[in-house]
Image 1 (tube, rainbow, N blue to C red):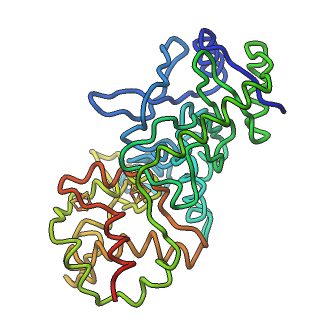
Image 2 (image 1 turned 135 degrees about the horizontal axis):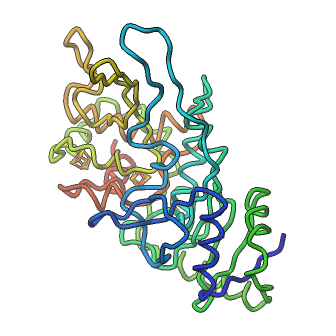
Length: 338
Ligand code: SF4
Ligand code: SF4
């Protein structure tokens, strides 16, 4: 299916069509936090933002998710209802790429039906970046402001309209269902979009040459750099909670009266309790070991297992860290360490 054009004065209609057909999620402000939330057909879409604070992963891997419900002292369990079809609208290319990286993990040794069920029912409509954030470095780790990996449709803001490029069968079906509101895109529109993509790529000011890092990390296990780069860390875990590729979770039971539910919730390898054994032993007792693990997980273990770096260069961990710990500077130290 060829690219099409959506006039901005028809954006409301496009949103209404999507919301009538499927559960629609868009970036919405909750207090000061921009995150993906379900919206109805009446929402006034606002697709002017840099990136959401909370990544799009929260829709397919919720912060807290009920796995099943039960009654105390009974053996029956009640599974959640099946997943609804959903559309994620306005996803930045780094977040879409992150979901396709995380897919590796949840379909690795055991298929995770909760995550994969949501992924299968989700159509991802991306929005190419035009003003990368100050800490973005997506192009250093295999992405880019108009990367299409993990997307079903890519939108590019042309000013008065969006160029709409279907990328997968799911994306084509979605566009066909909304067909009448689109116009034909001209070769000028295609050229303008291409130019905007190149200009955005040129605006990315931070970078790191990642070649050799995965191979070098194992030899730095006892290096002094880990103490140095983790000295200021508060162990708050925000770098992992807001990371679009972090996927660690805990499973807990919550019981109220005779009603119980088993749920899973985001956890963080930056928390001391994360690896605390029942015996009291903790293999990652200090922030030195936890920081070493965070970097190794993304730039070493994941590469060994799945042949891809588990970091999409969104820069959230840098921008959100209360003590300015900067993953690009850590990687630079890794490169320079003897
Ligand atoms: S490690 Fe940092 S820069 Fe990389 S994907 Fe996670 S939050 Fe983004
Ligand atoms: S955000 Fe910064 S302070 Fe908080 S755990 Fe991560 S590195 Fe440490």
